[in-house]
Image 1 (tube, rainbow, N blue to C red):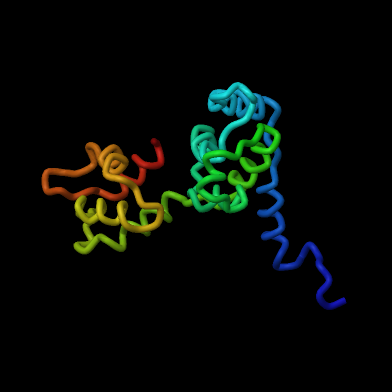
Image 2 (cartoon, rainbow, N blue to C red; image 1 turned 180 degrees about the horizontal axis):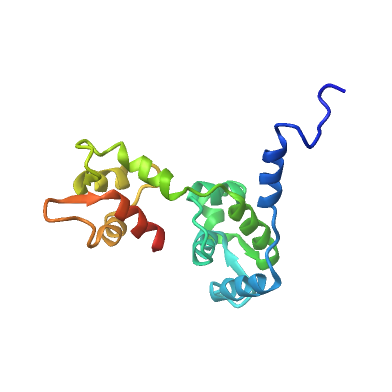
Length: 171
């Protein structure tokens, strides 16, 4: 019948991609995650505050935006972020959700910075990059930008953005 799904369907590659995103964590990974989660438990009740969830995920190698984390937590108020707590069993499915989010690739990041390469020579002005990092998307503060930019600018104040992206992806 028309509209029936078959494995020759053009949607099959998409289905395969979605299924690959649903991979389970190994028992060893879960143990490691649980251990890291425990390090953030400041009260000793085997729970963490909502406002620690993003930091835990980042400590575990994920890189969710604050918006992603807030959405996964159900868009809590600032008060809920500080006061609500969750245990590891509630955290693990959230970590799986973040793990399944599409990740930017090296090429994606290089393309994003190439827009600012006015000379077409593989560089962007460090000052301009600082402005972008502090005003667009997930805004970074001056301390974060200084740490990220340390050693990245040449004597002319330019940043070779391909090397910069490699640096960022290795941090």
